[in-house]
Image 1 (cartoon, rainbow, N blue to C red):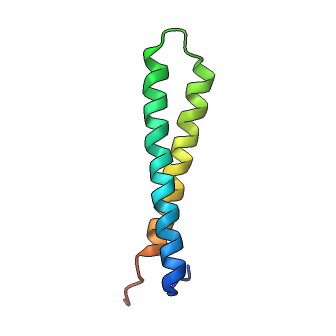
Image 2 (cartoon, rainbow, N blue to C red):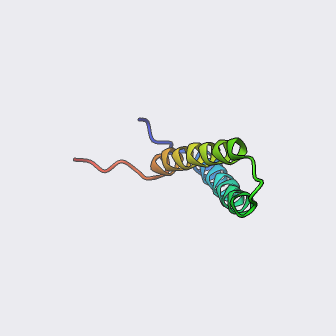
Length: 72
């Protein structure tokens, strides 16, 4: 994978990571609140968990783009 070297691009990626992490934390809170509710919609909880997992994967991919390649 080509690593971005442009400082503006790196800043954009870092900002995107921060936004995704915030959404991930927000989903954590929403899921916890729904799981406390006995009448919670299980399908909604599963969808939120799936979205949270997708965000985690996106965050990991973007963070790896921020790490410079080391020569072997």
